[in-house]
Length: 307
Ligand code: 8YV
Image (cartoon, rainbow, N blue to C red; front, top):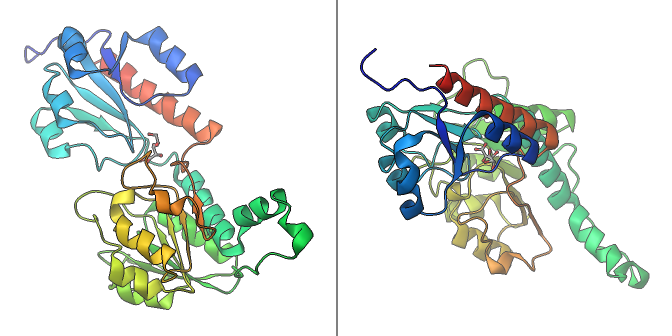
């Protein structure tokens, strides 16, 4: 032993809620505390060995600093863009994620957002419910089959989106910092060139400083008034004021958005737009995947207890 405390049953600070059954299981196995304020945290800080946070929620560096015995950050997600990984490593804090568990469901939602915004499914639902059909037919949508799908980020989620798009008869191209060896899809080293080429641009890349604001006005204008943007990545990847302005002024054909710069706040100007589909960060939000993610989080905590 290096003199580190024996970690028998780690106290756990829960920042990201797990599904109720998983939360009950977590509380059965470990002493858990909910984060309410740094002041309240200080009362239990000494005993906290682990934190459960979310992919979208992150972990405030001040909290990391307030927990001298922290040994594990268990992310209920795959995005670590809001966790200071350098600081965690410096402090000897392990970071676990639910990598590999949510790829298919996020890719499914991306496909759903494409279908919805291009065919106007949600807009048409509102149209029928409002009795507008009695007065005449709704506007035509855009076909999916045969269209050009541009994907930014070709990790497991991006690959899943590409497979789904190909199954819908779409042509596929992608942009990443480096070309993916062996990929059968067309590579664009320049995101603006990909945006010019495609009919719909889907964002499936990590958040964080390296990608912040990557989808700027030039990219949005390259997609253009007949094109669509779908974002299942992070709100930070898009220049959100530019996106709102382009949607309001018809410089972008439409958007399917699952993530936003300041969740759960969504720009007011988007709420009334018929060519925008809005989701509350639902990428991994299925019963099956969230149960699997929670089981993974609890296993990581159990592993700490046994260490
Ligand atoms: C979160 C996400 O897991 O995985 C991620 O990084 O953004 C989401 O799937 C979810 O919001 C729970 O924190």
